[in-house]
Image (cartoon, rainbow, N blue to C red; front, top):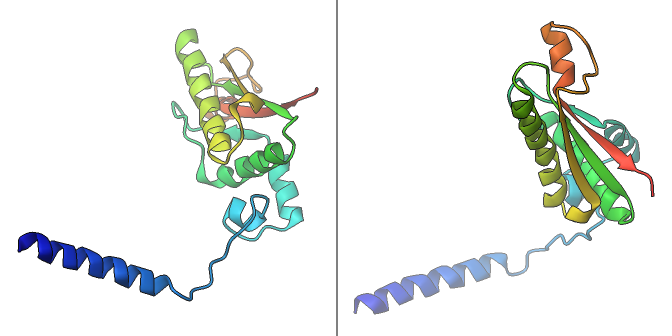
Length: 161
């Protein structure tokens, strides 16, 4: 008897779910549809601005991509998906604080974070390479927080084939 009650409840829920979607218009989008890719309508001008950004900065001792940078990484993912012959190298960097070994690992985690976003959007791993320079290639010299913050970065470099 208990099993019969559970079956009736489950079948009722399934029936209601099926009825609630009956007659609704589904918005199917193609892979290249900008709205699907970004989640919002995107003008070509804005996409061009997003593509111009090729350096992403990170907080001290962190490797998560800032929310405001994600749309730019998406734009690069879209470009890579549209051009399967293109390849990118993600170069991870750190400030000069910490040991060489620690900074190499942190730079790699930063580059891997950007790579993860690209791959989540469908970019094949074969189009992406990751390298960490750690603290070996600073873009700004100095001991100030401003100088150090400019060195905590990942650069997207398109490789020429």
